[in-house]
Image (cartoon, rainbow, N blue to C red; front, side):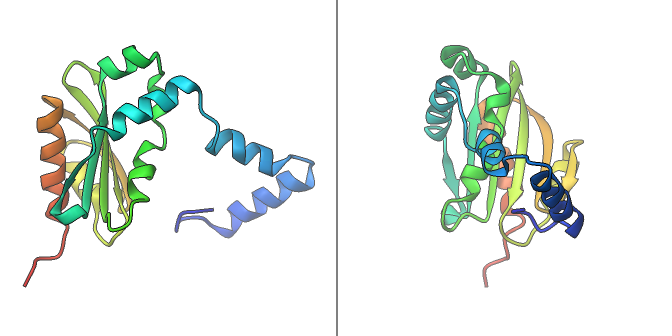
Length: 160
């Protein structure tokens, strides 16, 4: 229900589930708010990689294979990490990079402001839509994050 592409059909499906006895509060909690300790330890390490650019309007963070191994977290436990980045006051664009193989990063891009992150993802063979997209970038983690941040900076309005 949080995104602008939510339709009346979505609300109808939720109404139908509730009418059939589904505990929607419990389902929401399990899907959105439950984490294993390993996942939280991974999040802690990922937040330590936050890099702020463009005066705090762009933030990147990443999860390396080493972090996953050290915390014993599953790669799937990074789901939603990018949305934590977008919750920060002043952030207009966020990128979360997850290493899927040595020096291969799956980037999740998000826009809080106007701007088409799908256009950035398409440069790398990825896709999505204006406010949420993904792609794969190869290279060292620092370099990959900096490259994505520079591309996202192109979406910011030019200063006069």
